[in-house]
Image (spheres, rainbow, N blue to C red):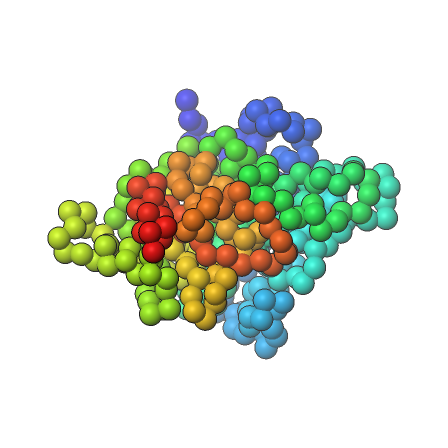
Length: 334
């Protein structure tokens, strides 16, 4: 029986034995992410009151203008993971290369690497729109006690041992999976604890929300254009509605709760797509599938894609099974 008064810490301890790696390291790792999330949440909630919003006048390795909060969130999560000595490597969307932890310490037997998008949707922070953090956890494939290598990070999404996101919105939530379903925890700001609020989240098999930046319609693949027209067809028995925030975590979270599809196609301007496979698509796809949804690049399962580079971009579609499968049929036949 689900206990909605259960804290995230209690939930982690209770469910630790169900995971194949029950040494406690994974539990400590998720606890570190939880603590960092509370620190970032505190700063996000001060946006507009202190000089922490706006552009930093620097460009990240993706060629995108960084926000001040991008720097803050990136440093906060990296330091939280580094200082507790529970991971052997970290890769961040904001860093050009991965970070090796204790690479010269031969006694370092940490097994996990973390990939993270510290502040997804940060360009929305100035206008008080929900933003988030996305994280992905793998067991290293190189020998423990040695320096991590690129291959430790370039693993298929199906190899993830845990993934999750934090959404900083009207309430702050941490949603994660270790491969045994998806659970959501809401932060009680009065006492600083996350409580189980959304147990065993499941995607509705169908939905009526489609989320896409229709401003790029002319650049979309034919299959995506046909799907949008299908959703807009007045003779369609299903009443579809367009809802797009422009923050992956926010759009995905809403669709997972209410039923819908999130779409970020490749375009004539971004022929390989724009979202990052390792920092955004893989963790969201893992959560999506664990909640009963489907995640694809339009043709193949996201979690089966073998990464080639640390910052690889791909097209991304995920959501309620019937909606994604309809999109795939239109993509394959065009």
